[in-house]
Each structure stands twice: as structure tokens, then as C-alpha cells.
Amino acid sequence: MGSKNKLKRFKENETFPNVIQPSREELVDEGFDLKGKWKSAFFKNNNPIVLELGCGKGEYTVNLAQLDPNKNYIGIDIKGARFWRGAKTAVEENLTNVAFVRSQIELIEYIFDENEVDEIWITFPDPQIKYKRTKHRLTNESFLTRYNKILNENGMVHLKTDSEFMHGYTLGLLHGLGFEVLYANHNVYRNEGSPREVTSIQTFYEKQYLEVNKPITYIKFKPN
Image (cartoon, rainbow, N blue to C red):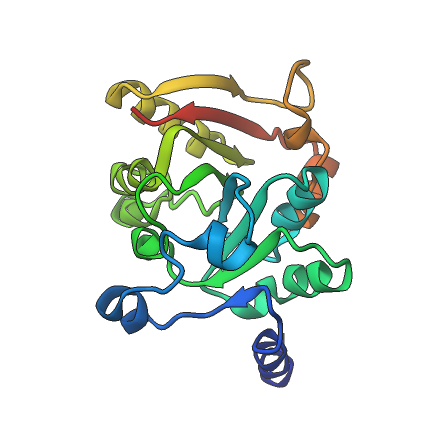
């Protein structure tokens, strides 16, 4: 993507009512206005809140919102030029249950209050296979602790990935930490019984993986 195109998208993001772009200082030092008030101040309803972390173009966030209008969906990614597409689609289709936040995921506990979130989706994250990069892996113990903090008592996490390494790593970690694994499948399109929201939504890259018969894995788990 050219720099002019990026700049254009950044400027258009500023005009979208569903895009929030807090600075690090605003989140960490000043206290974020919407923390603890997403339902009342932003969505103006009492529906469950569902996050997509590392949402990329926002395809999954938007599709989930279309599938279930009785939940509020928030995509989070540091790259605003990417989720511009999802934000624009949500505006064009008048989806009032969608928002996007431009932020680093490690700041998530500054964006949401304890027990404020009902579900978290992690879709096709970078598996960060190199040992030194495990601190950036979205299902490492540090991130799981953050998710545990913002999820309510019935909250759950979904991991959908094309990486068998990520699938196996996460399952092993969850069992080691005593998390409750509600569902695990190493090939959701070959095995029956996969949840509708897992198989009925396919991202651009997911379709490419399927064309070359790459298995798509899925885990649903509950923090302890």
C-alpha cells in the first residue's frame, strides 16, 4: 500500500464514528474515558461485548456483527490503515454494533475494565515461532492474564488459526495453567460439529489457505 493511500485512509478513519484512536498517554496516564463505559457511553445498550484482537482488515469483526446484531463487536489493531476497510463497511451498512480501536493489544486492560468483556476472538495471529518472540504471542501466559482480567465470569476466548504450531502451543499452555478447554478441533472444515461462527466466516487469507488444503484449527476456552 502506498503512503498516499495510507494517509488517505488515516484521514478517513478520523471521520468515522465507529473508530476510536486513543494515544498511549491517554490510555496509560490519563485514564481512558470509555473504560468501563462501553455499553452505556458508546453502544448505548446493555448487550454483550465481543473483541477481535489483531483484527486486520476487520472482516471477522464485521461478519460477526452481521451474524448477531444483539452483541457489540470491537476490533482492535495497531494498524489503522488495515481496519479502515472494516470500519468503512460497517458505516456503509449502518452496523451500529461495530467499533474499531487503534491500539497495541498489550494495553487492553487500559481500554476495558475488569469483567467488562464477554468474549474474545483471536483470528489468524502471527504464531511468532522464533523463541525470542514468544512475548508477542497472543496466547502466551502474559496475554492470558490480561484476558482473564477483562473477561467476566462466563467469558470465553476463541482462537482460530492456520498454524498447527500455534494450536498445539496454546492447547499445551491452557492445560498446564488449568484453563477449561470447551472445544478444540485441528481441522474445522473436515470435522463435523464446528460452531457456525467458525465455519461460516472466512477471511481473504483463510480462503487462500483452504484453496491449498491447509487445515484451519480452532479452540474455545474459558480462563480460570
